[in-house]
Image 1 (cartoon, rainbow, N blue to C red):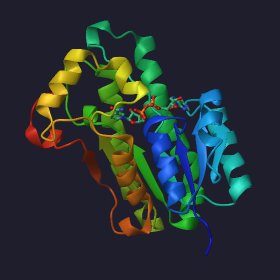
Image 2 (image 1 turned 120 degrees about the vertical axis):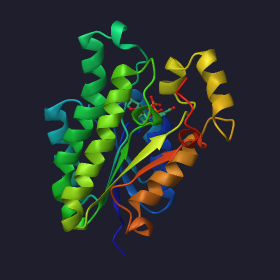
Image 3 (image 1 turned 60 degrees about the vertical axis):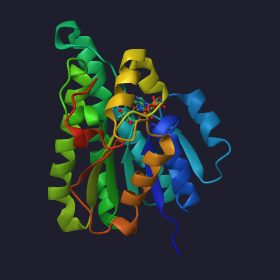
Length: 246
Ligand code: NAD
C-alpha cells in the first residue's frame, strides 16, 4: 500500500511535533516544516519517517520552494496541517502595526500561502487540510486583539476552503485548541491567566500536545472521510461554558 505523506508546519516543537510523531506512528511519512533550523533538526533526528524542511511559512518565496521540495522528495501530499503560529497577548490600544503584522504574517498569511501552494497536490490525492486556530478565535477578550483576530480569520478561511474544495474530494477542518503548556502559551500565560483557566475549564486543567495530536491526526485520516468544514474545539469544555477568556 502507498505510504501517505503529511506536511506539518511548526513541527519543531509543541503541538506540531506531537502531531508529526503520532502521524508517523500511524504509518505516515511527515515533511516537518519549521523556521527554527536547530530545534527542527533535533526534533526530526530520532524520527525515521520525519523529514525536516527549514522554511518560513510567512515568506511567499519560501513557501513556493517548500512545496516544490516536498513534492519532488515524496511525489505526493495527502494531508497538510497548518499549525505554525505565533502569539502576542495585548489589547488594541497597546498593539502597534508592527505587532499586528507579525501575528498576521505567520498565523494568517502563512496559512493562506501554504494552503495555496499545496492544494494542487491535495486535489490529486483527495487529501485533507487541518488548520489550527484557537479558542481565542471563537471568543473576544480584552487581550489578544491580533492573535484572536488572526485565529477568527483562520476559522472562516477553513469554511471557505471546505466550500471550494469539496467538489475535488478535498476536506478542510479547523481545530481550536484550549490552553496547552507549550513554549508559545507559556510565554503569554501569566500566573493569573493559568489560575483562571483552571477554574473556568470544566475539566479543570490544561490540555496536552498529544490530546491535540489525536484529534488532528483523526481529521487527516480516512476515518474522517465525511467530516469537512468543521470547527472543533479541544478545550476541556471551555467553549461550552460561555465564560469569558481570561
Ligand atoms: P510552539 O511555539 O510550541 O510551536 C510553534 C512552532 O511554529 C515553533 O516550532 C515555531 O518555530 C514554528 N513557527 C512559528 N512561526 C513560523 C513560521 N513563520 N514559519 C515556520 N515555522 C514557524 O506553539 P504551539 O503551542 O505548539 O502552537 C501550535 C499552534 O497551536 C499555533 O498555531 C498556536 O496558535 C495554536 N494554539 C496553541 C495553544 C496553546 O495553548 N499552546 C492554544 C490555542 C492554539
